[in-house]
Image (cartoon, rainbow, N blue to C red):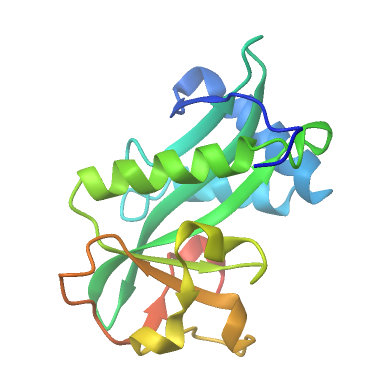
Length: 173
């Protein structure tokens, strides 16, 4: 952990957080596209999983970090997609995103989920245990660099499906 790391409390989002979550995603990505994606996923009962939309809150009560896990499928079998993960620009590199991701992974494990997939920065996600999804026999439905499409088995003793990822419709893939 860096010296700029601080203690973040994490919790599932509530209906009162919707506008703030939208603002975090818009600010982090510099465009409303990811924020609109979260809103579309929230409205998709087949994708949204209560308790897996995680916010990170500072000691002063500022919501600064966010991580979303939604239902996707691999070869027709359930998996989770981690996307997006966002942090307000002024709080980036302080551990807010990592705290939200770790809480989401712990919550997913407690719910009995297993395979988690992320298309992301290969220098960031391995710290949580993600490795190239191709090693699991799992592939993105579009062309992406092998090292950027990653997977994590929350319970390595359980089998994981192999095949192509089918994302919720909101992803537009």
